[in-house]
Image 1 (cartoon, rainbow, N blue to C red):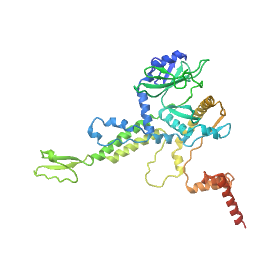
Image 2: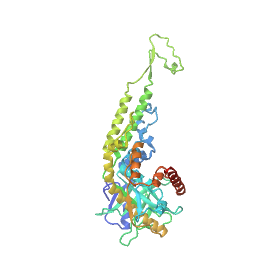
Image 3: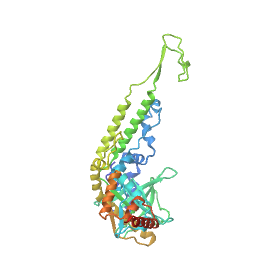
Image 4: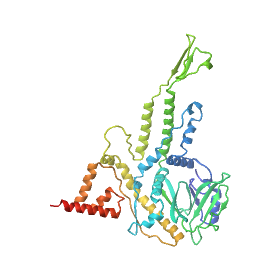
Length: 438
């Protein structure tokens, strides 16, 4: 949707200046306050990613006839599986080093950071862009994170970085949509932070009557791909419709009762416990089943899923019988996706640095304490299952070449062992070693 007054798309507003008057004017004229196809499609993607309200997206295709409503909808949860398979970069949490060391303090205050960053990455791949807000929980004294899938960005004409954002937070009792607005401080003018409604009413958020941004920056980090994966969502809708129709076909395969030469149909009751007596020799009663190719329909669904997977560098194994593929075979099958993962690293490294800078400012604003400035990221390599023979050979090689100590070997098999237990275990092994010596 084009915003003829201010910008180019539903999530972008371009202003001639960044003064407060221009901001307020843009809010009152914003196309973001209207529903449009782009927002509706993104909301559908969110429903399929989080597995919520799925029936509503399938039922509409069967609402025209009561005969098509004889089975419940059969939605398929392929979107989160595709997202997890595609975003290998966050399959394992990255190692975040502050001033060259792991910080237990940061791990404590950054609540569920690994979970939220993975969710952020998967939604960004799915919808093409997403945002994450850093906030401070005063009661728990920790940083917390909210994923914001639909954020409107405000730009000054000629600039490529937004100076303000807004996003919806819900509806009031009268169904008036409610939004939150943030803008950054510029040229000595304090940034703004307030809420506004679809009707254009602006009010202060609790605890901030001056409606100023206490951080000076927008506490929201953004990530963006050049394209989205909404074709996966459409495939999920198509497959859910097809599976519902297959369920209908199975039900109809029980047969449609047909009576010939019978005028008084009200007296006929069918069922496995009912006996039907036909007195007229010319009359008949039978069940007729449709000629549906359920197996062929399932193969068509598989073909559709395979095609969408190939579009996103993914390979699907359907679990047919036979020997499970080795880790090396899985690695070869995922070679293209692994290459795509490597191309993701610069994008997410930059995003992580921007997100951490927001963490530092939010944390310092609320606690008057500082976090280290230097963040170093190490994205772990993707791993594939090994057979016991392969894993044993690897561990033996590392032991033989002093790449792993006996202590590390014990921790490998028992990661939760305490230091006392480990010390006791090492003592037992040493005693056995002395006893076995000639």
